[in-house]
Image (cartoon, rainbow over all chains, first blue to last red; front, side, top):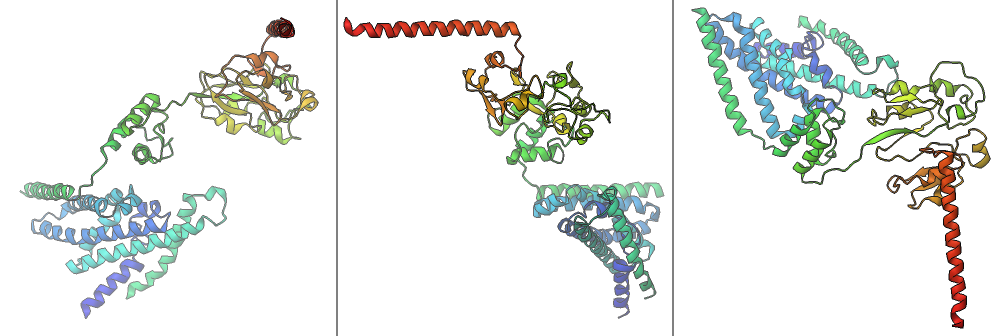
Length: 195
Length: 298
């Protein structure tokens, strides 16, 4: 029972209170880049969730190996290696299995490699001393938090097209302001931390 | 010893992942059309986006899908377009080089309603009481097109109207977008005969505003042997598909509104030739009539 409560706490924390984008400011590049349409935003969110879950699992195992050999200082290098190969693999898989999603994600798919949310989740798992299950749950729910944030943001941006605002704010400026306001709103969830 | 472990561990991990990726690339291999790669080789490779597609690879895919013409990549030039056409199994495009042309020779010939002393810009000038010229179609000569041209091909000519240097022009038509009077069109580079006026008024209304205006009299249309020049909306327009460049229209134009403008001497000469021809045909017709009248008697 305690295990389940713990996992629920991790989930709520990853999705809302410690949302990767809005309170940890990780993974901002795809967040701004692939949020023009809800469809592609959902695709990107799902891809990131998948990569984060898988990366959490594999990096946790790799970390066991590193600890055993007393090589903790190699964490970052080893994790980047894992993540890069993982993204390559997923790119190949998507190109074969889901070509439409592959073309929709375009250049942002290889960019997941350098998505700091993925490396961030791997390093945070170690920092928080999570066990294997906790790590995987944290990875997946962190990805879900990313998905939630990018889908909300994309739906706002779709509506922004019809909004009236000064010409100087067209494009990225208004997107950044929107992202800032959303981050402020998500700050409201920080009260959940006591849970 | 620690360093050895680190090197070995990362080496093993790298080799392992490499192996997995190598196997995966075989399993998940997607068959690509080899023509796409071949087309990509004939594009400029600058990823300039001038074709409207995201990068050269996007352009190659569009050409392969038939969404873009084989000549979509302008910087690659006609040789590469021909090569791509061959890859696609199509005939090479025969599109002629186009150049911009200013349809006005008014300048100082055009009458002015008032002296404009504002900002030296054509759009600004048109905002003041619809421009300083009597002619509401003419070139204002403040050089908005000259400023718009990135290639130094536009200049204000000796008589105050803009002219294009066909050698330098790349037909990007930035000048056409800058011209508030919409005077600049693209014409085939090989054609030399052009109408130098865009005034759609007829007769006196056109004649009173400029000494070079087309009055829509239609003399050129009658003179053309190839049916290549017509008066449309009160102004002569050349059909470049039919025009052979004989310049007969330039010689009959009473307003000198067709370039290359014929000199008075040339015009007199042509008039004399035409007169002689007319007399000859008249004489021949009379002779024929005479013969016909005499024939029944014989």
